[in-house]
Length: 288
Image (cartoon, rainbow, N blue to C red):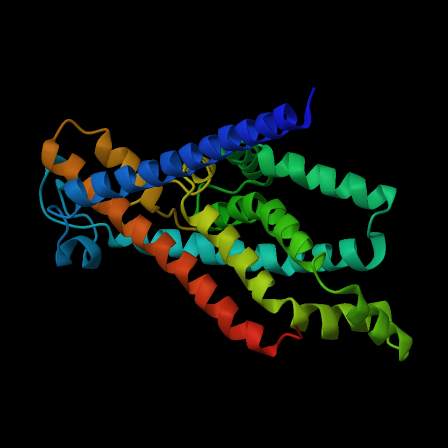
């Protein structure tokens, strides 16, 4: 094959894959835009101050008065509690992976296990959590929802933090070890501070995953029209509120489901933009 033909073939191949990439980007942007437009078009007319400041009243699911405050508070309680527990266990695991195991065989097996756990459907976490609750005599409650969301978020958070830490310049760790620091001191005082922007983003990524999940809390948190006042009380969540409202035959209640979806979308968007803003602020204290 002549040089000219090879050159033409390479350019045709490049143009083909560029077209595929642009098509994929356009498809993703269109899908996101269509979802947001649908939620705004159907949810905004049903949105009201009462929707976000009141709990459901009598006959709410028949189209009468009330709101979704119980679901908003319940979702925040469960997602914040689950994220806190996941951070307590996940950050040490991620630091141990990169500080001690690194690319060893055990490190490979741990990362593989976390990847498998990440890919398990959330309904399986819910079934596992429900079975565990039956074994220890725990009823559907806010605590049950927090525990299962912590289990759901843990592999996501650990793998995200692990990938962030692996991007850290090796020279910084070697310099800290060279002046007599232990591996634990390097992990706590160098790695965390240097990679804090990425760690915060990983934590907020896991939080966003937890607050939007319905299947895992369906069996473990239950559902109630009240705001939980104890860890042993059942708790509502926005995803389940959307599901139950869409399941009713009343158009007004179905429109409220889109309003609840709009509230959930706004929370997730705030978390996403907040993580970027916070990461940019914290990156000022990192060594470039």
